[in-house]
Length: 99
Image (cartoon, rainbow, N blue to C red; front, side, top):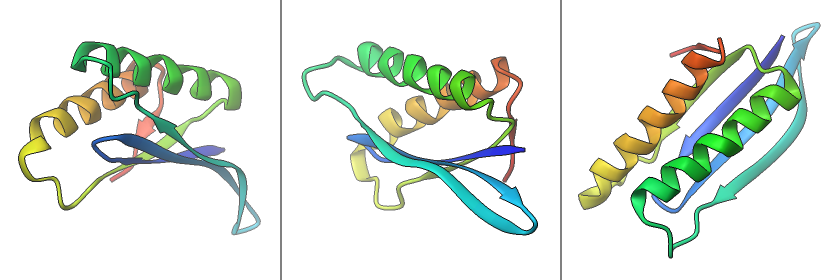
């Protein structure tokens, strides 16, 4: 089974895609999505959404975990929107979110 860990920050989304085989973690990819500063919030959300859907389809992701940046400050609303879009994508694609 393929897993995806997502780490949400205000200016980027980091991710790891891996599988467990014989209790050993085999990592396929570790990368980040840099969100262009010139994008308005709607464009940022659409950009993240399309990127995550592409990764889910390419790697056949079945389970996920989402972690949000701790020191958010005044940007909490934007982070919550980004987390919500990612959760929606996972739900629509049949990816189980593990807490």
